[in-house]
Image 1 (cartoon, rainbow, N blue to C red):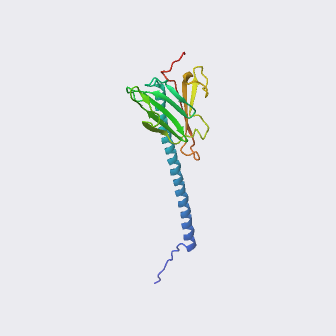
Image 2 (cartoon, one colour):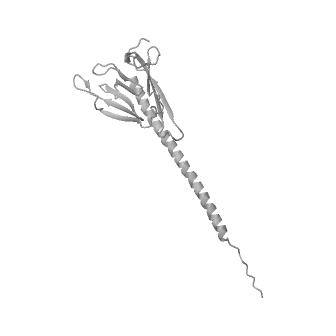
Image 3 (cartoon, rainbow, N blue to C red):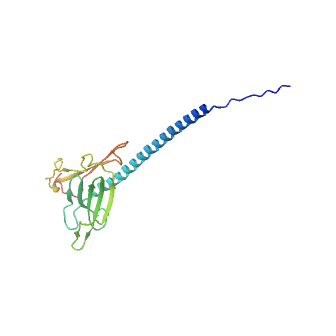
Length: 203
């Protein structure tokens, strides 16, 4: 009686090394792709969140500007005007007193400062704000040499540095948001405008 012994051929050492190498390369490529997708999506989500946050802040700014009014001390509603700063009186919290409000772009951060009047007669002390809010920390207007605030006169012309504040009737806001200027999806421009309701006009 003969007994047959079958021999099953296995992988050689070279074949094992090749298979392991290929598997390792594929794993590295796949993990790198997944990591890149996570980074890209994470940046896009963070950018979208910051744009949404800034949009809400600008909507509040427009509301404040529309309700611009004379100060409790009788001051004219609009006080400070420049490409990076606007200061005015407005009853932003709908109480019995009018606040002085300043929006200031400092480097890449857009701030809102609120000053309350105190005393009788009322006096506004502008050394320390009563409240401070951050509209956005990623405003790229200065980097892009773009005005944050622009002003239009009663005649429809853009105001200049010599235009009296009493001639301004319309205010435009342009805010460029980008949490990282060196990466995609890139910058996002927010634009809005408002005509203060309580300024005298001859329209």
